[in-house]
Image (cartoon, rainbow, N blue to C red; front, side, top):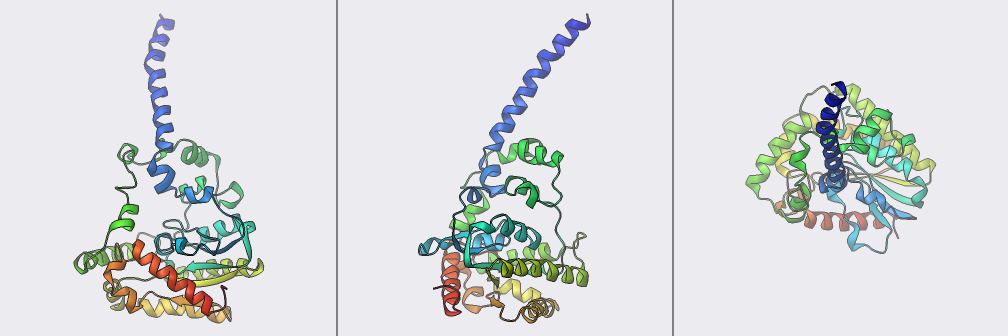
Amino acid sequence: MMKRFLIKIAIITIPFILLLFVLNFIFSKSYYWDVYYTEQEKFRHVPENIQLTNVGSSHGVYAFDYIDFPEYTAINMAVSWQHHGYNYQILKQYVDCFSENAVILIPVSYFDITRIEEEPLYKYYKILEKENFPDWNVKDYFLYKVFPFFSTKEPWKKFFMNENNSPVAAYEKVVSTGESLADSSKIMYETFTRDNGVEKGEEGFLYNIEALSKIIDFCNKNRLKPVLVSTPQVDKLNAIYAQTDFFDTFYRFTDILKEKYPGLIYLDYSQKVEYSSDYSLFFDATHLNKKGAKKFTAQIVQDLKNAGLLE
């Protein structure tokens, strides 16, 4: 009797388990997991002798497009929601790929100043080696690298994401209007200032100064050229921030770093009118679209040439 019962259980459970493994395999190859969420595709093809790169969050992801500058070996190493701690880990992992005096663009975003958001981001199990991943553990490794279907919220909804219905499509196609950017500005401001436990005020300010200093020290030690940069933001978003004392804190942050590292270059485009008031360059209040990225990257390259950092 027991044997027959176990056989029945096996007949029911084994196909179900096999189905889950098949779903997990398919999901691991899906656009959402393989390209969009983990953003690992570019890290499969990191070139040697890199002369120009950027790290950063989604501001970096969407602001830098080096396709018009084949004369430089360049790569965009930004990852969405990547903070200074993981900027450092990315640079550390790929330091041997950089040429001497390579330019490292380090974005300073509005949410990088007083917030501490350094909890492990599980996508890095797909990007970083174990020794470069803070708080690596075997449980999360298997859960987030080997079995992504079981670690993703509502994975069945994400099976059908593709390059035509993801935020990347907005980057490629969307040209915003003043009305849409007014709404987007309110949403972005609420997102960047939401007090969900990570807003730490002066404690966060000092934490981020230290985290960014660690990157600059690493660059200097390895004969790389760190350059701070703030990417363009829509004037409607800046107008909301201007109603607070935020910009006093923001520029105190960059001033301390420039004082700490004499000669450190900071390229601030966050409020440049030629970008902030040209809505055709954005797909939302804080991210450039492809047209904006091409214009902005050309501006960056020229400014780096003028500063003697690129030939």
